[in-house]
Image 1 (cartoon, rainbow, N blue to C red):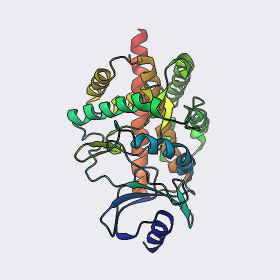
Image 2 (spheres, one colour; image 1 turned 180 degrees about the vertical axis):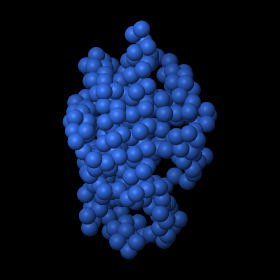
Image 3 (cartoon, rainbow, N blue to C red; image 1 turned 90 degrees about the horizontal axis):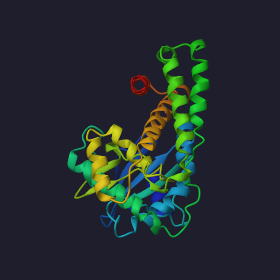
Length: 324
């Protein structure tokens, strides 16, 4: 903890009185709840740049944090989204002894989790997303580097891995090789949808990109956290997450009520839903093959891969039924 205390003092001017471990999410090495001598509370996330699946998130810090800082100051969103704390250098990250740190104001409360979201929380989340999308025009700078990426490199990477899965050994290869045809179909469908909707014709707004129940905090009000995926995209880049919420229909209905002038595009919803399933699958495979997880983490990641495969197969079956 001494290294963390020194960093907070030198880089942020925070004299820590107490430091407690906290949940940091998929992309982080560690996270901490920090209280200073005056009782102010902060949330510190630590990233390990040596992890292949973490480098992407580190590279985006200098792109999304200034936009998040601007958004959190808007009256409509103040207190409803996480507020970043700039370092003394003026930037939003600090690198010390091989680790990368970012700091936010701490939000007291509980994280309901994906399956723990209530209808009321889901409706409030939809309201926050509508406010975020409507507030995008208030950003007073271009927010470079946050443009939507339609190249979908993970599709080609997963396809290449699947072509060689039958010559590899291990449980992961056994799981994948049993469903290769369905996964190729899912990848091809994602690329076809990408080419069909081509994001140029849809209005672009700032999207959170990962607004599920693990990324919200329930205190006095619901607060949307974990902004690593913040980007300019169609609103459906946030609304696709309805497929992961236990009250997904409520999310779409509440959003439509909050943005009465916006018509949700079902094709874009389908594109982003399938895209995310494939992207998550590839990220889990990378962690399994490139980061040497322990036995418990390996079991958890294999479970995620199986789940992503089942969801993709369900998409295949739905497409076949639609064509009959």
